[in-house]
Length: 359
Ligand code: NAD
Ligand code: UFG
Image 1: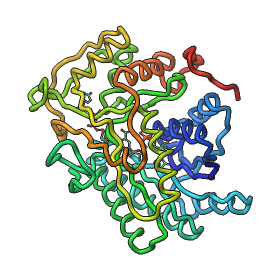
Image 2: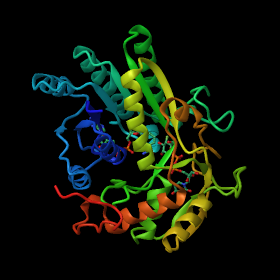
Image 3: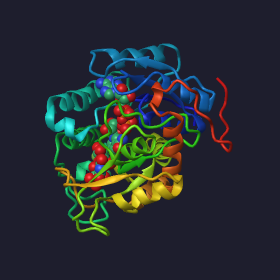
């Protein structure tokens, strides 16, 4: 489908992978990003993978008129934006506890600005980056979309608020369509090794911490908790390959194009993996040992979280295709070629089985 789509947050980790899949599917994405947690170089890498230089507008969602100016410019050029994939936002749970206003401001008020601009330009299709964190402490597993939203941190509450806002908007305007994608734990990187996760500071999340230990940037991994009621006492999560997650956005963009109304969909594999199992999978996929140290539980963590992903299959025809071993191999390929992320000077080597187009 050759629609023009605005991708907010398109320069980020999930955004760049989503651009690659959108372009492969024939969409024409336009990126709006303030680069607060990303690098301009990530889009150069997307161009190397796809052969397409994605139009990029540097701007902040909260700046009055900034998104509206982009929508107006594309409309004037005779190529109106037809839908928005809204990935921009802040995502660190701990930071949201320490600085909640930053999160309400960026994730909620920023989204309101976007929705106003869309309304003014008659754009009625949106795909939103939500999170499994909206469920809070699971009352049952696997998590289905009808599980109550009881988030237990400000970040999760901002995602739940935006979901409520979108549901209200769809109820008020029967022509409005919104798909909210509740991601489980995306990890790994594009198979080319050219794009991947690029945490600005010490990683909060398990997988980038593992890869930074593997590449020698950190000495040891701390394993938070060994006494959960799980297979080996460590926390269990539903890890999914970021390329599978990106494919989910293509499926959601197609779905929302045809379908008004509010729809919440989990994107996960349905498989739980413990911290120790992920370490073992990484070691066996890469041959690199990960030294680790047992540490107390991390405040706010749940024992286990994994998706019921049947709704994604039924509505979007989507299911995850890549294994934990694939996630480890591809995440390591990215980290090894880019030990300092996008700040690495050397050009990463592309895997032989992946075609990398020249710009
Ligand atoms: P990311 O930080 O790599 O990407 C987010 C992008 O949004 C960045 O490029 C950042 O510069 C941009 N941005 C932030 N605020 C902005 C603003 N006000 N205006 C314009 N651009 C802005 O994060 P990601 O991992 O790619 O996450 C993308 C989305 O998915 C986020 O909304 C996040 O909350 C959600 N999500 C991520 C995960 C995960 O584990 N990575 C899990 C669940 C949900
Ligand atoms: N963990 C460690 N050591 C670390 C980091 C994490 O043992 O250094 C453990 C955690 O205790 C947990 C598991 O690894 O048991 C996964 O932790 P992550 O931080 O990687 O992932 P979370 O499930 O806690 O949270 C992530 C994002 C949230 C998002 C959620 C669901 O940080 O924003 O996935 O998508 F909401």
